[in-house]
Image (cartoon, rainbow over all chains, first blue to last red; front, side, top):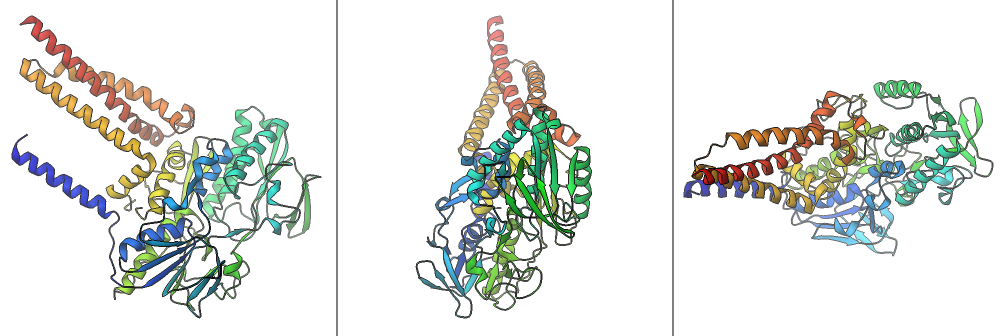
Length: 431
Length: 122
């Protein structure tokens, strides 16, 4: 190799190396702020990674008792029987960035007036800036007769509770297809994470029954909580069409309020009063609300549709608390319309991180979150629709060459092979 | 889409594949060195590169087409999952990875044969 070629090659490698080391390009702030992140889920870890790099002089404290980290977007694939619980279970310790202090306790109390949080062990942690990223609470007990321990038994499935429950749900689906009967699906009335998952489970059950030549033995009914199966009109129209083609019946404005596991009967609240349906299989999606520590604090909305479940009050564009400007809400706990998916976190975190960096560096924060929410809607094993939308319900595809309302293998490819890597890169603040 | 710059894509690939990414890159490097070495050998022996190239392209294309229909299985789906043109296009792109590896191997083997035949005739 000639000397000139060697030098050109070496320079190219050095440039590539420096770009790799830098990762996502971003501004920095030299501020010595004390930053507390409550919650080490997708939002908390991703935020910690970005702030650690962008604010080298800041003290960053992460508070969460949870040691396991779950790749929740993969729960649907566990429930399909394609992935195992191990495929979606990792350790938080592997993602906590160096230079970030991790207090391995739950947050028990938020005291925004004193700019402090109190842990379950009574440790008081003061902050200059607080990021509330606690995630949400699955309120199974709000459904009379329902309990977490019932998942996988008596024809009851629920993929939200965790990897083990998602796997138990997969087994329950298989048993239902073998024995036949009536399968009920649905979702709660309030805000929820991954609102597409209840539809995915319905589609997957239909697909698995067809593959086993047992579709004639099962009757599938989707109970929508309001007059639509999905909040985004074009997606509603598409899913309604697919349900009709696949002989999946739909009841509108049916909200599950009680189940009787022994008698296999489910009671739904409807505008015309309670309705009871017999089932052989039911996929229970619990009401979701803010954890008690948030709910009992001054942080939640005090009025409006997001107040009842305790979601943290936040400006929907900046995710900043209007009454406590040093507080931000990120991820599932944020009291904004839509945005309770991992894909939403991917877009929320750079907004709050970059805005804080700009503000502490004396620049004007300019980034805004548009409500980006994504749902790779699995419609069969090997097929999905890559649905992405904003606060206005406008479809905003990331890839112009992938039509969002078409059932495609390439969208399934993203779900099955692409998301986990992107999610891990997001946790490290690299995507 | 603008968010998917090469750096972000590298990190996503790295997080998806882990150590396999480096093994794959290492294999690509070995094959590249093999191709360059084969070309140099052919030149030194005064043999044309045309025949090894044609052999590599034909076998590589066959391997790529065959792999295109096997790609869905890698995603735990059946070949029937491919339906739209975009599905086939992406499956073909992924199949190019094993296809290119096969083509590189065929090129090296064909070049070696050409060189040894040339030596035998001299």
